[in-house]
Length: 156
Image 1 (tube, rainbow, N blue to C red):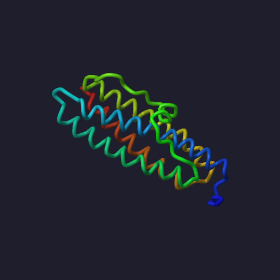
Image 2: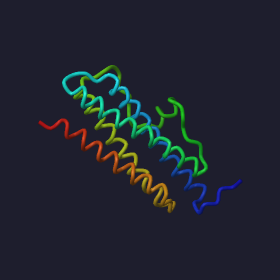
Image 3: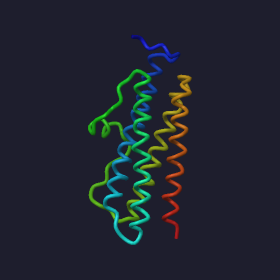
């Protein structure tokens, strides 16, 4: 059945593609954060282990929200590693970095997601898609706050 929600097919496709990039970035950052949670060592172990768990849990829950918005727009959400690699602006980290490098990597990851969100806004705005704008605003707030908290750990 044809979708008739007041957003053109072209606009729904543009918004879904921008959300697919956000989903890929979010999944890649989730995986990186979970990896760091498992493998962090050193004097900040307990603090970072717990912090990373909170962060990857939040990211995991966001994946469904983003994917379901893509589906509501009438498109399929990407769901494979190969699709995520193509769409994501975040590169995986090889090996196990030291704790401070993990923090730096996660800051860069959240900043990448923030930029992806900012590039998605015009598509949603042009489409008059308030629901997607709301999702993007919520995600932007979380990623900016998380990046700030991670940056604060690097202050001397």
